[in-house]
Amino acid sequence: MFYLEDVWVKNRLNGVTLRVLPGRIVALVGPNGSGKTTLLRVMAGVLKPDRGRVGKPDRVGTSWQNPYYSFYKPTVLEELVEVVGDREKARNILREHELLHLESQSPFTLSAGQARILSVILASVWNPDAILIDEPTTGLGYKERVALLRTIRSLEKTVVLASHDLEFVLEVADEIVVLLGGKVVASGNTLDVVYNSNVIWSLGFPKPQIVQLAERLGVRLKSASEWFCV
Image (cartoon, rainbow, N blue to C red):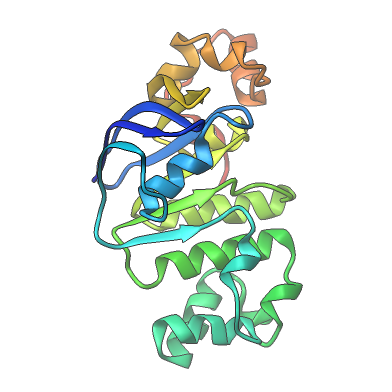
């Protein structure tokens, strides 16, 4: 479990209190400069806050905004072998995520979506207790978004992700934490926040198409994921 109490980072976070329960997928949402990435860095243990208490799982995997920073081996296969220690096991993982055809390719030549998925896989295959992902859908096309969504859902781990992409957040997250000016201004079950808080819309986020469709049909979503054939 992640536990943050009254966490301050100068000019970035202002008294953030937050709990993330095991097995939950939680999305940090907010405009640029709201503190999302800073909060992820505090949760990862790579940034020490000026004030406050932070508790985190012992083993935390990370996939930062630029996934290419995760790579340093000459091929995709070798990236995985370095982590899992076995070439056949690495191939099976690539096969499972439909990336086996890329095993001999340099990870630095992957598309944005392929690189992101590989980065998330590398963050998860060593069996961490939780995974942190920063802006997972940046630069991704539709098919890549779907593949990434499947990958995140398959992790069966505690996941905290920071994103501007509310459509994606609705599809994947159990809970939303809305940040503004380094403060938590709304939090809770994803659909509860979407329906019962005007904060998200006041920040200028466009309503996701699935929400607009539900409103036109006069129904309330019970689970956004039920509406997506993914």
